[in-house]
Image (cartoon, rainbow, N blue to C red; front, top):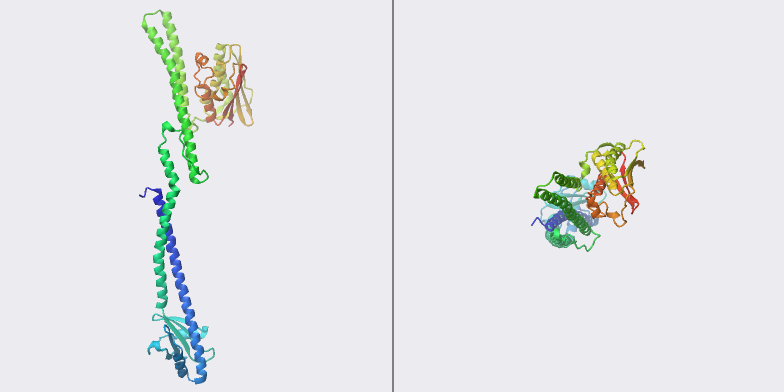
Length: 461
């Protein structure tokens, strides 16, 4: 039961509300008690003043303290209060009939305080007593009015009874309402959970229903839908990658197997064996290049920046080494390769092996698709705090429709021609990945039948 967010929210809500109600009830109770006591004191003082005024009038006529007290107390009666008259020394001289001959023992300090402040209060034997002087002059005597504290306790008992009944009732009603509110508020999450459970690899195109995209749950649903879209794209890309890789590996393997079967089918001459072995070697090299490229691309999904062997790399030396290596391919193809590397020393922070691999891939691609007699140039410069590596060729170029996809894995503009020259459609994809993991970029501009230009931009150390 406690695994439910709805139940936990209700319990938390009820707990916070219970503490709040208890604190509120305590404040109300003690505030009510204080008000009751203040009202009792004020009422007792008012009664004592009434008794004192009546006494002063009677004393003026009777000229006797005791006689005036008896007259006043016989005329003024209070059913729930006790009245007592005391002389200047605090001794009782008259009392109301409901005291039944007994007296209220008031400490002498109370009388002294009353004479000084014109009134005073005391609690004696469960009675609340108000004492005031009979007059403001030196006429002796005090009027004391007392009332049982139980009168206050009765009022507080009613307050406690109402609070004991009201607080649990309010808490129960609020908890029930909170439960249904939590249930209604979390209903979209339950719906998302149900819909998400039905999404699998077979229906990654499904999306969650988002009715209100501006609140928190709506934004959560939108985020999940975006995640599903990315997963769908990644899954489709993975499927396409596996299919393309299988297709690329199948052809050289089929050639190897077929040529081996032909060579072993019967006894052949040395020249025929050499031809078969040469073909097998070419296909094995092509297969090795594909496997090596696949191994590099297998690192792409992970955070390669964390595992790169970063060091200070001189791009001047890197492009010089790559140009020297690609010169062999250019001479074999009958293409002229030129290098423009007159800029001052340019240093970047990165993996030297991968950077050279990127440059060689671009040069290899340029030489492959440049006819004999054409030209390939490699340039290095520094612009706006970035290093720019430009590989330009005068080859066959790339159609406008194919340019957005040239960096896709296994994409080839002319698959038949690319296969004859050993291309697998991975070189440019690897080059782009290497540029990106070095916080750089690679761009293409190309005109069919006039050549292509690849520009790599890397941040300078």
